[in-house]
Image 1: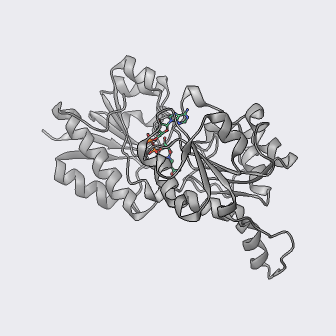
Image 2 (image 1 turned 90 degrees about the horizontal axis):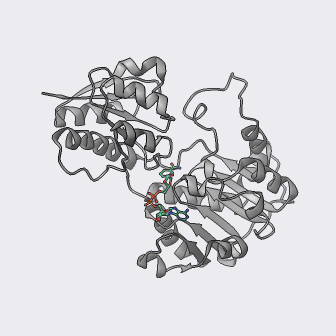
Length: 329
Ligand code: NAI
């Protein structure tokens, strides 16, 4: 019998090819829905043992609805799984899996945001477009002169550190579980030392209850004057209101954000004719020293194939009751 998988947030333009190829190969009965999962479209998954989602929130209520519908396995086509209420899933008996892919895409993008931020690329491009070729205010900084702090040295943090090692900067790192490869390129220090000694800080830890708003008014107070902050991990690691205050006071010199709090209802939708309910995003966009992208760091040609293959393969393993390397809870 074929294994039923309903794919939410399905994209025809880049995902269809891989979903069809791998579902044929694995004997999967594929059912697709372009919308993110919500109370109104839970019934689309009727008859499916598994659902395959993106970064939209899966709270207890929604999980209960899917459970009642017969869903027992959720795979997210992402590395992070903080959008899923893991405790509720465990209590209901729903298995949750993610789909990690190569770390280089996010690491490359992080380096790009670092360089754009320290070289004031947003301002340079804005001036260039209006044929303002002046130099005043555009002087940048060089990575080789900086101490870079890396928070989280898992797959992506480690790749960032390896990329950075070619730039000649001092690298300090913080992780709950230091790793030997990283020690070749960086010194592990405590978190307070990262806050106090870094000219640039980049975030690569998963978002959890224990590190929610790890950068807040109090920790911003410990940072160096003019510090540069890069976040390609999760918006909830940074308290956005305190970030804004830090930028406006001049304490924070530049910011590169691929992720932001409350991005879920905005990112990946065309909202250009809408009045957005996210004042913080509007404010941040207006600052010349803040570069923002809409959660794109993962999006390379390597990503789609790997993620779709592994998320569907995980559904098959679950249905067959065999070991599944992608299960997170
Ligand atoms: P990983 O699981 O390989 O590494 C995470 C590391 O963070 C681990 O070494 C872990 O020990 C460490 N860690 C956990 N809690 C910490 C804390 N409180 N302080 C410091 N370190 C802590 O994960 P990977 O693949 O490196 O991804 C990291 C995060 O990047 C993901 O959780 C996800 O949120 C984000 N991400 C963002 C993408 C984007 O497109 N912007 C794409 C992929 C991932």
